[in-house]
Amino acid sequence: MNLLIELAALGVLAALIFYVSFLFFTTLRSSQLIAEVAQSEQQLFQARVAEITAKSGYERDKNEFSWNGFRKFEVARKEPEGGGICSFYLRPHDNRPLPPFEPGQYLTFQLDVPGQRKPVMRCYSLSDSPKPEYYRVSIKAVPPPRDKPDVPPGLSSNFFHNDIREGTILDVRAPGGHFFLDTNKHTPVVLIGGGIGLTPVMSMVNLIVESGSTRETHFFYGVRNADEHVMKEHLERLAAEHENVHLHVCYSNPTDTDVLGKDYQHAERVSVELFKKVLSSNNYEYYFCGPPPMMNSLFEDLREWGVPEAQINYEAFGPATVKKKKEADDATDTNGAGEAAAGFEIEFTKSGRKVPWNADIGSILDFAEEHEIDIDFGCRAGSCGTCITAIKSGEVDYLSEPGEKPESGSCLACVAVPKGPLVLDA
Ligand SMILES: Cc1cc2nc3c(=O)[nH]c(=O)nc-3n(C[C@H](O)[C@H](O)[C@H](O)COP(=O)(O)OP(=O)(O)OC[C@H]3O[C@@H](n4cnc5c(N)ncnc54)[C@H](O)[C@@H]3O)c2cc1C
Ligand code: FES
Image 1 (cartoon, rainbow, N blue to C red):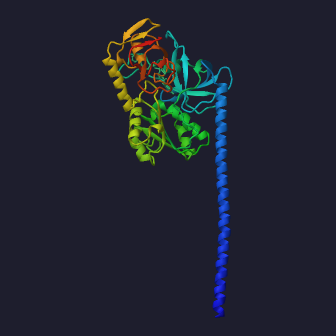
Image 2: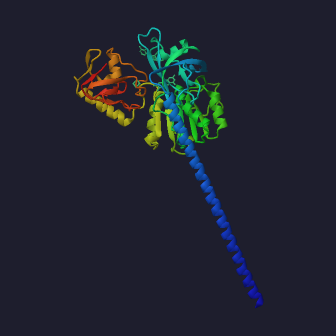
């Protein structure tokens, strides 16, 4: 009997010890958890403060050091990259600090090309992350089109390659453009460069790694073969040194000397079919720039794959290339309306001309050129604002969404079409 009582007492004691230990360790773990949560909240808070401080520093520097109109830059270095591409490192001639820019933005140049009756305006993306001492652009020399070998080669790009040297002074507008990576976000990102369309996404990936961001980054680079593959070592180093950066080089037409798995990872074009094989899901932010066929198919195929439009960002280097299906339909309607209302005219007051509108020619800029009416242009894609033209009366529609709609009373002629009779100050 005594033994039973002693055993029961021991049992109660053991249960009590277990309960007290349980309470002790639970309290300890809770306080540890609370401390951990507090610590991670504090880290988050500190990161946010750093972000806001950096952003406000960015805004301050941008406001303080930016400029209106053109600023003189000296070509400090000219560096052939291979593949018909040359990089130009530009230092401000006044030696004042440079404003920062968003990765993906471009510079607009006003060039005095010999033999041209007026300055030539062209845009070139900044191909490196922001640096305090220089801006860099990388330019591909544009040959005549294959079907027109007798026409002159690209004016500005060949002027850069052939005439611009170290020490040349250039007139440059401040960085601009709406195609840029939102560096405040930490969401996984897919960056895609086709050919020379590499430049804006190169700026983005450089900034991601230099800022210490661990954002999951897939970098797709599409070229024909090794002859066009530029900045190879730099990209390979980024991927080797940063485990969040995944490099996918695609050769659409590899040569016998190109080595799969070494020079390139995929013997195919960059496409959504490839993304389906390589990415874990479609849930990324996409940024792409490349030749027109790539731009068009990527946009439509990403949408078909269920990627929300808000997650698809792109930039065209020439006449607006991505015509969304709906917009294309709308444009057809607009053109249809234009043709139905055949007989309405566009009046160009400065040139003293009145011409019947023909929607088949394209934008107002194309139409003006067809009739030898001068409207300045840069990007021909609704990005740079060079072709802005005052509307004296009438209304316009846009063939593709301009980077930023101009103030009412004016239009971006390179992407605008008239809704009806129009009077322009051109
Ligand atoms: C936002 C933006 C960013 C850009 N970034 C870059 C970049 O980073 N790097 C880069 O290299 N480019 C970039 N570009 C493209 C660049 O701005 C120029 O469009 C490109 O260099 C070609 O300009 P060009 O003056 O050399 O050619 P153009 O003189 O405009 O000629 C274009 C083509 O027309 C042909 N042509 C000439 N005359 C005729 C004729 N009579 N009939 C038919 N065809 C003719 C030329 O041979 C050439 O093939 C960018 C463009 C934009 C809008
Ligand atoms: S030419 Fe650049 S916006 Fe029209």
